[in-house]
Length: 458
Image: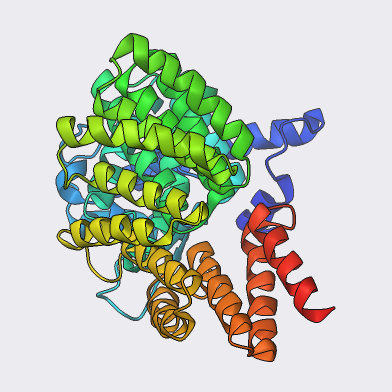
């Protein structure tokens, strides 16, 4: 005889199937609701609300111990007396009906490791039932608050937090998908909260080197911000700035430049040229111009921007220091190495005041200084510096993070200059493999590495 869970698996989630399976789905859904009624009579009155809450999540494992905070649940009338004991009992009861599966872990201190999985058919039918009852938006509101609470102490640029971000990220973006796809429009404060969490997820994708996914996540958030508050709103402008950066790092410099220019025109009308968000977009545009090889054009813009930023933001503001860094890069690209090093050192000194040696931008500035030393003939010194930077980057961010691979490419070029050709070839081969996996075979960085390797192996 077919078991309950086997029947769920057989029916699947395809809504376009024939009439008979569709009827089976309705019967099965009714069976679940009857079972949930029975659980409610047995004292598991949290079972149905928990199942409906999970139906708002993505079809990915849900780290329930880290996210289901009783203090958040208790603020909603949907979850009466959500003590840890009552929540655990309701979860076991749902697992007993095969409506969810619980993945337990031996370490009680690792709250992010324990996961819930939910079959897609269960998710779909439960969401439909919640929507029919008029309560889906209420569950979505609770989920938004839970996700914000669980992620508020996570930092997008902290590699130690990236496994936690990876666990929560699909559920944060699923919230926005529900808002768009199902026409659910939670209260304005909740929507802003969901947007903020989704934007932080998209930035985590960017910082961890997942540029393609960062483009997707930022674009989703930007579209919703434009629809909700207008393209000239601060929410839309800030998200657009980060979307453009993700586009550029994903290899679409021309698309990013066009997007930055159109966004900057809107920022000019809505917030003015000296608003911090306008300055940030101008910096991103100037960097994009620089990366397309138009160094004198980028230099002129960066010098004008630096004058404004020092006056409006202050000399030690993060954006001001990034302008200084990009100006230094422009100078190095034009062969003005000593002048560039002075700007690099200014950027590094300012950045170190508020950031650690493990910070990606700290490593980036140090890498640029090492490259400049190579250019003025201090190759041995550059190699020693690059080896140290690679060690930190690989330890903190991983061997295949795009920044780590870029630093290793620079190390290979310095090794080549020293005559250590075989070591340079081996380094470039590993970089090429990593860039292909992380960025794709059509990314400019991959193509640059491939050309360098071909020149060494001819």
